[in-house]
Image (cartoon, rainbow, N blue to C red; front, side, top):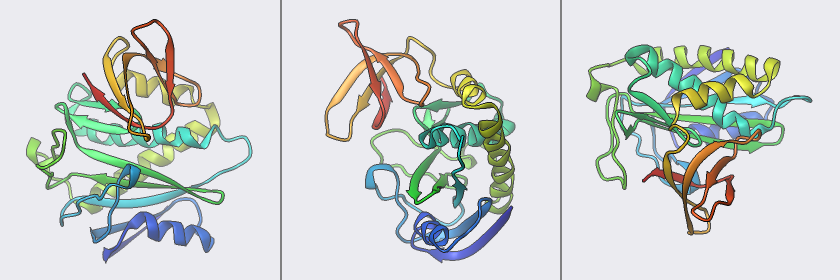
Length: 234
């Protein structure tokens, strides 16, 4: 495992995609003190003030690996494990597919992008600062009295992710799914899923499918699989 740090870049994910194309091996991490063109899911801009974590890594897909999309859940449980080490799991909860909430407010974002046989995983974690102009509450570790440095945090996160990727490969999705379910909104929770096409679906959280899709039970009794979108608690 190698962690490279730079003072500033446009986007650690964009840089890691380029490194993947040039043959970078699994286990390489890139962390930036600041990003000038950070991005979240569905093309959103990601604010990148000094003091937070902006880091990306890559996974080289192998024959027999579980579905690549399920790495979103692997990344989520690894991050939750690190944050819960500070607070215990009672305050840190997961929201599909890979948002981590602390005290009900958004703490982080995870962005997965594919580059050939590599999946690039980008983490943005509010360590020292959090935005106040979002359409949902946000928070930071500092707001809860915890102030890890980005260097220390990324080192711990890299170890946790490596362990969970090893389990994902060796045991399949089941242990990842079990951990995610134990730390996420409980079955029966009312959710709204805003889909990429702009539509919205309301339903009751039922389960995760084997491929990581969210299954909502709709008012008419039918089940709807959600493969992409933003989920909000109702």
